[in-house]
Length: 190
Image 1 (cartoon, rainbow, N blue to C red):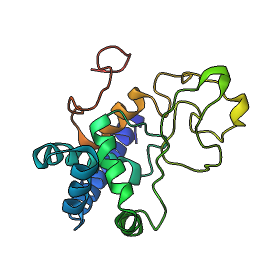
Image 2: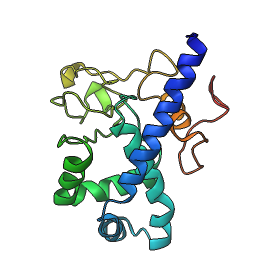
Image 3: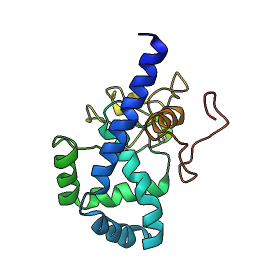
Image 4: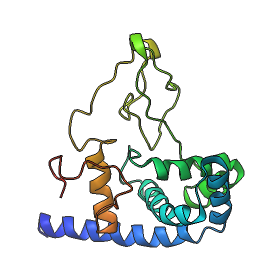
């Protein structure tokens, strides 16, 4: 088999797996409850929630595929839905049990370092499936030694390019505008 054929088959498999998983995620029975939390916590109207929810579900799909480690979050509106989901701890645990083998989908906020190298990011997390600008998906160092660094490669985990590539491979279309990706500004973006 040629390498090109193998890559196309793997991409097709990811699309097929992703779409099947997305359908299961969309059928989770508690999305309406999460919408009520989004309204309470963020003032998100039902119309706004209906617009954002499918993208949050796609984000979860990318995480649950376990093929794209270190995905970053590039939408404040989608992040607000994620926060609303997390705030419903019993529902978040139910979701994790059903779709992620009982493992917790951790949320590690992207925090800029504070003056004098001090940062308020947790340094006890291991094995997260998201990453912040500080840890770059690697085990964290002591907070006092933490310095902000950009990813070494443009498509490194946590980068907008990494997210864009994962989204395109699985969903076969560009992410909508509510994702704040620098499309056209980085190599490899359409």
